[in-house]
Image (cartoon, rainbow, N blue to C red; front, side, top):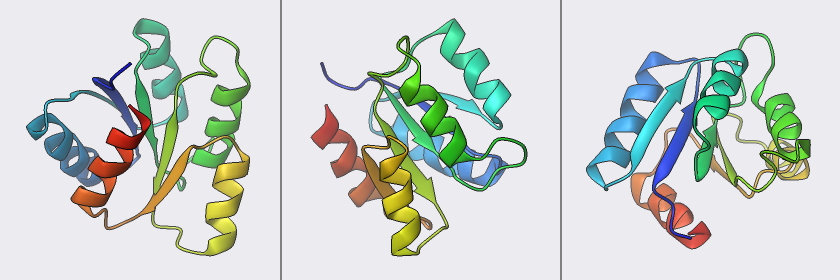
Amino acid sequence: MPIQHVLVVDDSKTELMVLSDLLTRHGYRVRTADSAAEAFKCLAESKPDLILMDVVMPGQNGFQLTRTITKDPQYAGIPIIMCTSKVQETDRVWGLRQGARDYVTKPVDGKELLSKIEALG
């Protein structure tokens, strides 16, 4: 099934705006959440085809949230791409171990992100 609806989870309003703009210009429908609580509210209202997940957020971080989502049978099938400023290889490995399908670092290369999204669809 092609990816059409994307949930972007990031506590930075700037990142939410940049990623939303990139995705909408390429035909994706985008919802945003600035926290884990907001992300769960969005999931309950409408299941996305993909989640772009920041790591460094107040409260529950992106690694924890990814693990929670991928272990929940209701949401386990939703692919997650970590989209973070954490550039260490250990962070990438940890993100993938939490259930993420892919990992991109900020500042996000738009072409790279779009190709990773297309590869999942």
